[in-house]
Image 1 (cartoon, rainbow, N blue to C red):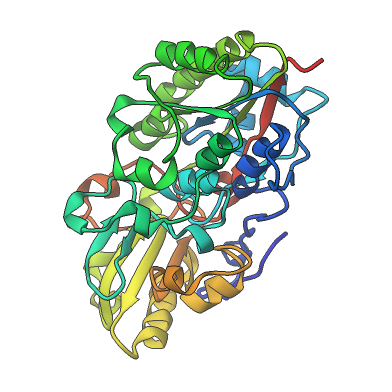
Image 2 (cartoon, rainbow, N blue to C red; image 1 turned 90 degrees about the vertical axis):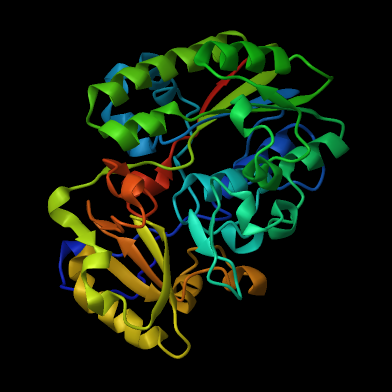
Length: 395
């Protein structure tokens, strides 16, 4: 489904409408409910039509977009064999924005961002000028993650139905506020390297009469950010990820399925398309706070200034970004078929969604993020489209 949102700037290829996430018809929000349904959990919609199993693992590789995988499949022979398998399913879409905090919550709740409320990398806490980094989630924000994201998680629903859960990821994330928001109720299993991820995942899949295991590996995304998706670092690590997938698939117990997906893809930024938002005073008029990230800026405006800010940003950014109001983004379905009132207040009054290889940077406020090579957050196919590959021992 393509959704033609409002656009500013010059006409042409850069003005082509983005694809909206396919919520309810093949998105990351549909994966956890479909997996739970395949495990026999009642009341969960199996939108993806996954076959019945007793044990299921979802392995999420941060940053491994579908288009990136297809373009580099020679570095991932085992994943390539799954791409070519007769049972291969169409690629999924991530949620919007295409960023890790939003995607982990989308999978972890089986809900769209308009319901779960983690609507980006950085947002402003309603009624304040406090910027909440929803990935790192510092305690200084004063935001309780269980109040900010109150929905029941897929892990809680699984455990209540008698399915034993495991969450395999770095020990550094075990007690984080993001984990409390996205994965509470899971049986956390710390694993700090590829070998540990493979071993702990395989062991977790044998626990209980039915089991659900989620495994998360972040390093491919890290190499993409630092060196770019065209780098040897990224390609070589993709090969290591490929071996991890093969090892987990080879250790599957009987009547089990392994599903491989991602939270988003990535594009390499182009220095010639880098827009310094701090250098242009016209982009500060009527603006309280600029949040979001370099590929999807959320702009919080002074009272009554939203339309003027939208017009100024559309004019100044031109073909570098789709500029639209919060209400236009909600109406376009970017956050789901409906957006809760409390969640709506967290979204910027004006959004700037980068096109092509453009980045919208804040060099003084965000020196680290502004210098990254690989970036994501927008709605280009390279960022939005994610794989859904499967290996099973179902007979």
